[in-house]
Length: 130
Image (cartoon, rainbow, N blue to C red; front, side, top):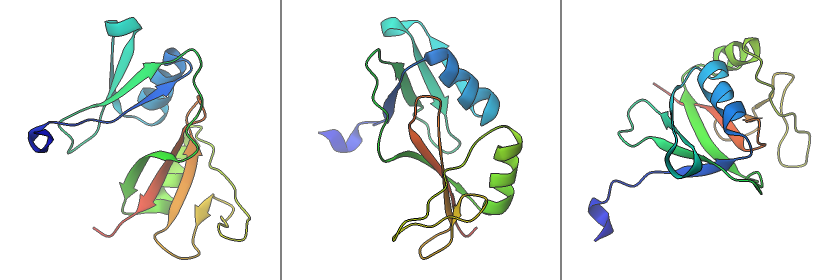
């Protein structure tokens, strides 16, 4: 039954205007808005025919896990470009996760850097081989 469904992902934000500015202007993604169901936003990701649904929620609680991962072939260049746009990367220095001065985790696994949207949801850029 569901194997042929065109599934899509969605998540909530506390303020749709702030989210639109962040995803469209700071991250440079294609985003559109609709007034359906009290206002929603769709993020269009390359290679994905089904946009990601973003909806406002008055009692929004940020996700405590990464909701979107953006694969990149050069994480240093991606982090530098996003920092120039005003994105702030998380800094970690724990037993399991340490990041460098740019917020890049280099201690095992793929290189990854986490940042948050204006609603506190976690996102990442993660380096992949071409």
